[in-house]
Image (cartoon, rainbow, N blue to C red; front, side, top):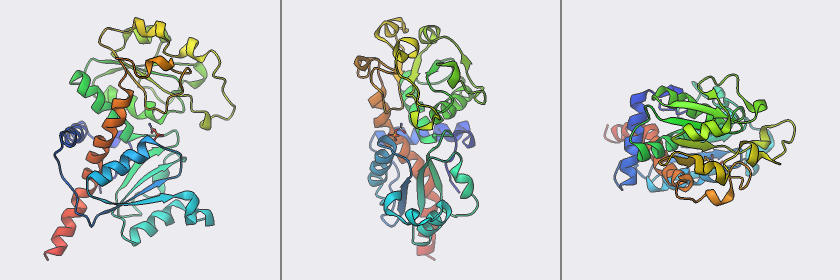
Length: 302
Ligand code: CP
């Protein structure tokens, strides 16, 4: 079963294979699904990039897409996530892509449904496909991960991107630094060393910014002075290494974690990350579905 739930379930070899497949898709080649394969996208939390790049990826692969919105479904009548996925499986979905506000929502599904589950972001937990598109972007820039210094800035504690990326980047040989307000440090994320913002920016090959995850805070955080205290200002951008790049999973809060004028500056790879998201997700879907399709083919010829 080729679920994709967290980055730490993937071996380094599997990660490199997914990145190679993504590059192939970017070059216009790669596996294409039969048009009898159905994928359902279940988004219980808002999303622009992940949702639409999955849909574009699915359509480029020739898959049949079943889009689901919680507000127009029987979730409104009290149906559980398990019953929703079991229903989609029963009526012919071959895989589900799920974004959910609950950390580890997939614990209710694994071992109980027989179709692959792809995690498109679980609460403060994990965001493996964001991590893969980030790895693809870094690899395109530097060719490898070993000995790179990558600083992740901002609301570390509530960021599933920080969690997924810090683990895998460390495993692939990069050095991870964290920077941001002390109240948002994450005692459970031990893959990075906390340093002061200017030091992090000066030492980094990749400066990765995060938005403040207001929707996961109990008290509303103030964005006043955040840019000057913790963000990427134009003055700090001038302190970056000559070859260093700026990344951000987006959505971006202009003028909060990054000066608005830097979003499309020469160093920024923010929109390239989004473009890469389609190819990384095509590779993830291929990994999830290829076996199913082979089984269907075998049954057809039995
Ligand atoms: N980076 C990301 O997950 O963006 P969306 O919330 O728009 O999908």
